[in-house]
Image: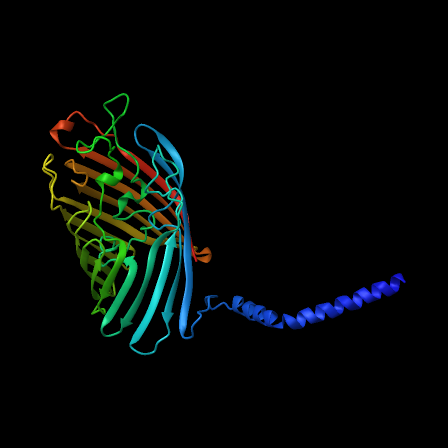
Length: 405
């Protein structure tokens, strides 16, 4: 009897398995197709568009670092998300077109914990802990007429002050406060380390973010136009919410011995506390043997200067020299040093000075970049009321890695 029951159970199991296998043949076929795609070494993307003749790409990166900071009163080790190139994920879609007309869309967001530009000695966990939008836009492009973009994305002057061919922008470029904007300045003459308070707003302590600004554009809900490239030259213009408008001229060209990248832009901000009129730009030259130079600068005009301080226009100049070479077989190595002077951004006739050192090592086989950077921020408060103030320097050192996919 026992053998009969066992045989019956075996027969029933085989029958049920065969029925399930037949019912799931479609699933098996799809799995087999996926295995073939996974085995494809051509680098194809595994995402398929719901509509035909559209290519869809999933991409992203994780960028984490360890930061050591010293503000003259205290020092600390912090674990941060590198704001020079934040942790993010996105999807791009583009029509397959053999004609002059094409269209596409992009959705990109970031999720940062302990942002390197927000942490401080009193807030070592500075993070919004939310998924923030970066790009949510659609575009239409004609090869001969140019490109129109609508949605949330980069205005025409976004990146205009950041043209940099050094290979070290992952840890340092003209937007120098990405590794320390939240740290506060202190008075070294006071044994109690008095906070440096702006006269116009005594409740607010002056920090790195108040003193340093590279006057670059940003991302907003906007409409933007980009012309076709003429011998490396492109004209862009955009209009955005809150009566914002800007125009930019960019250039990118490779010659036999050098590569050149440059940009110049003007922006008008109709509302808010940002400068009403600003001009900013940058240029970078990379020689084929690795030596490179980068220069950036800008000027900001305010419609309503603060009467109490007779505020001047704000301005800055930034310079970097670097060298790219292959020290190891795993990938290229880039090193650079930079220096910048920033005047009158904090509404107190301040002069901020910064210098730094950057190193980036690529490891091609694992698609990862390792980096190390040092920054020294100085604040010189020139107004007579601050004659007795000796402000401590702020120093940050950040080391980390970025993995892209």
